[in-house]
Length: 309
Image 1 (tube, rainbow, N blue to C red):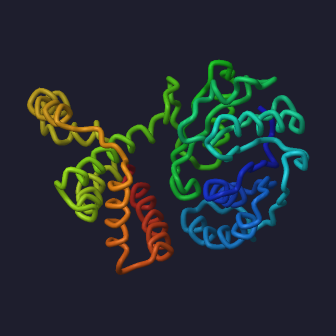
Image 2: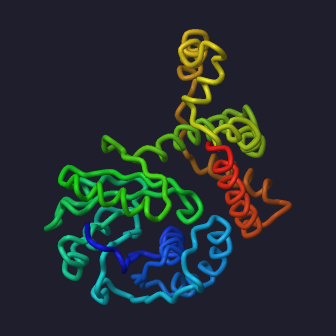
């Protein structure tokens, strides 16, 4: 395995800034590729705001916040041992970045894409060294939420996947190997299924946007913060466990699945959803909500560690 000392974060929007904060906290040198001046200017304040949270999570291994190198183009990268790519989720943009990277990084340097929906096989399609390209998809924000999905493409080597898993684990991430390529990988497909029903419920007038959010936040979401749906239903089966749950309540699940609809995000529906969120934000602004969310994530993480969940 190549010793990783210097990481290139290519694309530094919210995901890139979050990855950068985590990598710096873990003691890596980081070089940023981000031509957008607004994102460049936002980076240092983001890191400074993230740092106390990272300290509370026990993820900081250095005494002070290190400085990052920011460049406008991939061609300026020097001495890179690992690449975390976070550019726009469009395949033609990914192909251009991969081609540029292959001119400036060694052939054994892993290129891990944060793509939320694209497949590794498509991303590595025109690469000269496709075996070192894979998906390393986090959940936003990556410095706060530990899950990383690792997905191989058809040409990705087993060595690359093994090294990716070791690297992310060294960064105190919880790794998941997705065994089959699908659009959206694993976690986003699960959240998309829930979101589809949340939108459909709003469209049908079953509940308001605010009440839909409350139903999740104060209902199943509290359980899901501790364990996933299969274990949750196993406990819901009492002494008979999951088998009893499936035998006893499986038909009610099937009835709900058959009744669920796929909504279309029409302009009128989008306006209704946005208006609902604006109503939820009437008593607080988004910036305050982000700060409260992040501090709550720290406490949830600590709680899960305390109880081994």
